[in-house]
Image 1 (tube, rainbow, N blue to C red):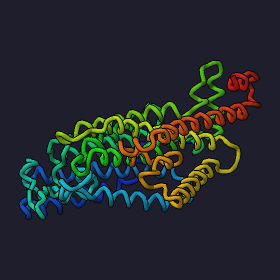
Image 2 (tube, rainbow, N blue to C red; image 1 turned 90 degrees about the horizontal axis):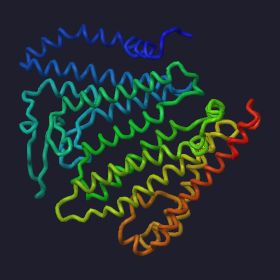
Image 3 (cartoon, helix red, strand yellow; image 1 turned 90 degrees about the vertical axis):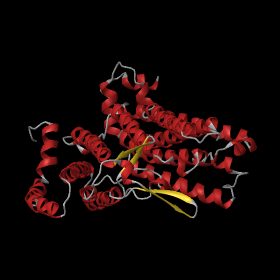
Image 4 (cartoon, one colour; image 1 turned 180 degrees about the horizontal axis):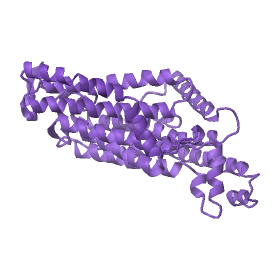
Length: 421
């Protein structure tokens, strides 16, 4: 076991392993300078291109190191394919900004060649307008972004976002680099809330509300948050050994949070993220357009209950005795959704007249809850909401029983009695 602290070990691995690549880049710099002078490139754009290359490379190196720390044996090939896919996706951006969902350019290191050929920092001079079939479009070549409605150059946006992403990756590396795989915890609860808040601010900052109506845009952002909170929820789950150790360390202290973990944290986080989405939808609506705020709130509430329901089920499954209980829990959940979707489709429930019945099983209110659907079957919608609350309470009860079983043979004879009460 190394005597280095987690911070020192993480810094060593982050800058030690790819040091040869940085050295090769340094050796090629004279050739790049000669090429830039021959092409009459401006010095500050040439320098900015190297800054982009360095910062974006460090960000992806941090992501690769995090995936290396967390990946299990035999999954390295999948991790490599995933990070290459992310590099390819992050390299896309810009173009016809008025027709894209996010008015944000590339976040990868391949933005550097685009930047070195530029001649101005003024974002308005980089935009070109044209009409096609009577529709006005705005082309910017990926060099300008729209940040909360303001046109800004992409270079500072890329630097800020890549640095912040690298910091989030680095925090997770430092937390887990010296831990046993059974004790991995990607982020603390407070850090998980901070990460969810950060991602939602980024989503709202660059989202193009004019690309869709406000309700469709809200559904799209809630869909993105589904992915965010599914990943964060899985990261917050505690296995049997971790939960047993936490409960034993809190003898004599309030442990209501352990009995219903992670429901309170996820409920607050999902409501907060949904509130951001609803606020953005209301503030960005066109003049004279109805906001449907009450139904946006209903959508956000169901989104929060649905996330909490599934994560609470997976937490209970994680505490069960057996081989790979979490994997089995995810498998059962996938089977549940496939079977539910098949049966509901067979009975033609995905139509406006019957869509309310699907809310008992699937997160359809996030997409299809509107005034017309609500007025047709209000009692069914309300029953679906109450059913989610009942299922959450049921899984909390099962988790409480599992905690009693975990501590039945504890060294503390009163621990199981305290949990049972």
